[in-house]
Amino acid sequence: MSNQSNGNASAVHPSVQPLFTPFSIGKLSLPNRIVMAPMTRSFSPNGLPGADVARYYRRRAENGVGLIITEGTVINHPASADHPNVPHFYGPALKGWSSVVEQVHAAGGRIFPQLWHVGMARKIGSPPNPEILPIGPSGIDLSGQQVTAPMTESDILSVIDAFAQAAADAKSLGFDGIEIHGAHGYLIDQFFWKQTNRRSDRYSGDSFEGATRFAAEIIRAVRHAVGPDFPIALRISQWKTANYTAKLAETPEQLAAFLEPLTTAGVDIYHCSTRRFWEPEFKGSDLNLAGWVKLLTGRPTITVGSVGLNEEFMRSFASGQATQFTGLDGLIERLEQNEFDLVAVGRSLLVDPEWAMKIRNGRFGELKPFTVDALNSLY
Image (tube, rainbow, N blue to C red):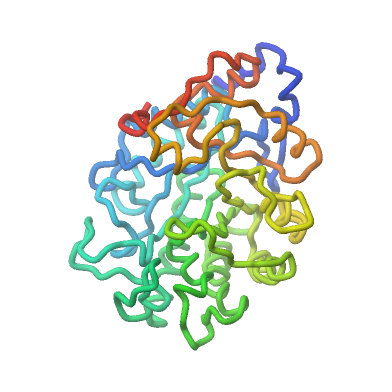
């Protein structure tokens, strides 16, 4: 029996009503607009998610999260991971993910895995395969240094195949959709970004058509593997882990040109990663990145970035200070104006599995503040 019915036991607090209206992505119905953002936890020894991982996600489903997007899970490619305890999405790890799906669904939740390849963010000698060199479009790391040779056509095809296989496995395990990680300077984003894509072939970063070709080919391969009705989300960002001011698109026109091949390839929903959701993406408009992407593509979007908090996430890690809840008024207003469709919450849900239920019931004073100590356990 679904435990999410607990969330319907009392009236929704009027101030957050828009967050608790249903939403559909194709044939997938979500009970509310709250998404658990993907957050790397590294609690899967040798890449194998265990019962503690299943409990971690179930707790959020039990407490009314509309959609869970898992931490990044690495595809079946030897250079996809840079840490031995980041979960795999292939081989024996699939048994663990089957249990996660079972637990989340038993609690009435919906769940996507986030499929990931870190590319040149991986250092030479990194586990779990220290003998394997990192790969990227031009072999250039995020600081602009030449580290390895550019990916060959064979390398590209092998990664595309691995993404497609992971998506097919996700569907067979009963996941409700998948998210492809194309943000933050990881492999797909390295093709998007001119600094890391200096190719001169059809994947060249000199044009949006070339820069998006790798991602579009992945999306088409995934669509072929999962069929027409299985939701595909793509996470994108302007910023990179090594460069917060990076821009893939400087204007709405450039953003439209960047998005068009991806939308045509089959993206159902865009997860638009920003560090502060309230910041305008371009001059002359208050729209954030999710707002612009929705306007330009007509696709649903997820916004994310310091939702309800008084400190941007990297600063909260650096300061070590508790990050306090500051309210949702600006967020609710934007949601009511249909600037975006869904709202991803990271740190707050990491530290407090009851966050969505407390918000729903207006128990704002009971919300747990985020501190970096929360990263040391899986609760």
